[in-house]
Amino acid sequence: MKEDPILSNLITELKRGNLTLCVLSQLKKPQYGYSLLQLLADKQIPIEANTLYPLLRRLEVQELLSSTWDTSEARPRKFYVLSDKGHALLSELGKAWQEHYQRVGALLAEEGHE
Amino acid sequence: MSDLIGRYVEETVRHLSLKERAEVAKELEANIQDMIGGDDSEQHVEQVLLDMGSPSVLAKQYRGKERYLIGPETFDFYWMVLKLVCLVVGIVTVVITLISLFFTESPVGIGTMIAKPIASLFSALSGAFLWVTITFAIMDYYQVNATLESWDAKALHDLEEAPTRLIKKSDSIADLVGLSVFFLLLAVLFNRPELIALYRKDAAPVPLFIGQALRPYVIGWMATVILSFIVSALKWFKGKWTSTLFVLSASVDLLGIIYFIFVATRWKLYNPAFLTIFPGSMTRWQIIIKAASVVLLILTLIGNGDDAYTVFRRTRPDEAGPARQR
Image (cartoon, rainbow over all chains, first blue to last red; front, side, top):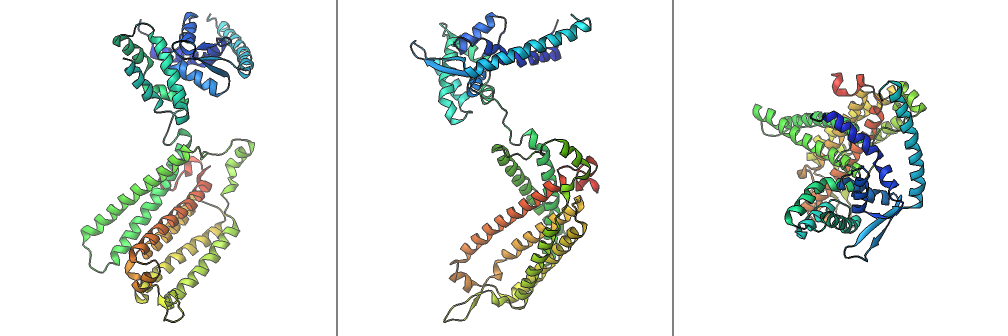
């Protein structure tokens, strides 16, 4: 069946809202752009490269991530890891997400949706 | 092949601010190299870059915000000002052009009577559009907040009354006094144009104007001052802005300034003997007058814009603009 454009739009929208949460959650250990991309893809959260790289940059500007350049290998890589501020924010954002997820779940269950 | 990557990265960071470019370029290139991995055949590199999307879209993601000439927050205000300015400028231009056609020395055919106002209307409206747009674009660029102010309980209650549309009595009185003084000065200028002159110790004064030529223009000028006076009196009497009052007020302001520019640029009014002494030559004098005209015009437009903001910021749709009342 051909995918409904309205549906796929809404799904994209739905996922985009949680993107930052997903990215932050995976940065307790340092990752560079491409390794994070693969890590998330392996965990069934595929992100477009052209979304992820700029997002990392913006989170760094917002001081939620700190970065270091690793020049020990052939290719220099910029590693990102949660800053203190990022840690604090991640735990708050995670809580908010849990709450919201439960509430939405309750709404759907109520109508007999599943 | 790596040249392809380099070009892609360059094209992306070109859209970013200078201080970000080097950092983003270095990181982006490293990430793309990682995505390409071992297979650096041209076909694979192409595929990876195509998947990354166009450089301008990517750059937009890096900037994190859309770029607008005039942003969605300011657009309504911009549109309102644009309509208003075009209306006022349009009316004033047509009136001035027609008046000046009536006063030309040689007789004018009906063709010119129609064509000239249309031509000057077109050029005036293009100019109005250009300047309003440039002004708003600059305001947007520097993030000047031109949107409606904060929404709180006070603003809610103000919706009905809009007390900020009151015109201060003191402002109207200052206008009336200023205009009266100016009118008297014009009267003096009319009677004794030679008083504006360069006074020197050992020689006769050199007047700035050629008196006989200036007189008819001074009469016109006095007429514009009388108009301004009437509108100011109206403002003082009403004590509150209405769309019509604003249009009147802006029109006479613009008429005044445009008439001033019109007179100041009648180069044959100036005494060449004076100009050779003071700015040195007619050309220099013309530059001074033109620069001064632009500054005065801008100041007038700013003043009118300020009034427009006061008048129209919370106007309800049924009285959204003077254009709709006709």
